[in-house]
Image (tube, rainbow, N blue to C red):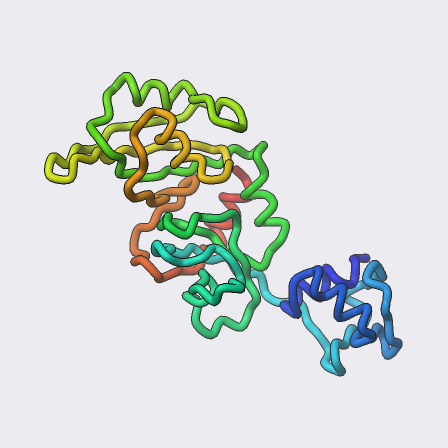
Amino acid sequence: MERLQKVMAAAGIASRRKCEEIIEAGRVKINGMVVTEPGSKVDPSQDIIEVDGQIIEKERPVYLLLNKPEGVITSVTDPQRRKTVIDLLGTMKERVYPVGRLDYDTSGLLLLTNDGAFANHITHPSHELDKVYEAEVKGHISEQTLERLRVGVELEDGITSPAQAAFIRFNRQRGTSVIHLTIHEGRNRQVRRMCDRVDHPVVTLRRIQLGFLTLQGVSPGQFRHLTPEEVGRLLSM
C-alpha cells in the first residue's frame, strides 16, 4: 500500500505537494468514491484511481543524462520565466525532475528522472558518488595550492572532505589555469567557494563526470537516456 499523493506523482500528475492540493479539492476518486485525505493508502495494482475523471497509470521510469549549458535553471519551473532544464527536453511525455543541481552559471552533466528511489540513492551523502569538475580559475595555480584543495579547505559551513585536484594547463593569454577537481560532497556552490578560499576565483565551471558517467557524445543542450546497465551500475555503487 502506498500514499495516494505518491502514486499520483509517480503517474506524472504533478509534484507531491500539488497532488495533495488536488486531493483536498475533491478531484480524486478511488474505486468510484471521492477521497479528500492526502494520506489515504492505495494499492496501485488493484485500486482504480481517477483524477478529474481520468484513470491514471504509473509512468515508465525515465533516466536521462543532460549536458546543461550555462544560463539554464536547474528547476522544473521558474517564476522569472528563465529557461529551465525541462525546456531542453522538448515534448517528453513523462514528468521528470533534476537529480541534484547545477548552478545557473555552471554547465555540464546533470541527471533527470521520475524515479524517486533512484534520485535519493544518487544524492544520498553516504554513497559518496564522485563528481568531477573542470574549472578555469584566475591566475597560475601552484602545486601547493592544489594540495590545499586535496587536503580540505575551511568554508563557512565547515572544512571540505579530501578531494582530488589536478592541474591541466595554463592559458598565458587569459591568465587562467584549468584544473580538474573531484569531490563527493554536495554543498551549495562548493567548488566555487573552495577556489575562492585559495584565492583563485572560478571563471568558468563545468561538471564533466558523475561516477563513471561522462559527457561523451552529448553536446551542450542535448541529452540521452541512460541504459538499463548504467542505471543498475549506479544503484549498485
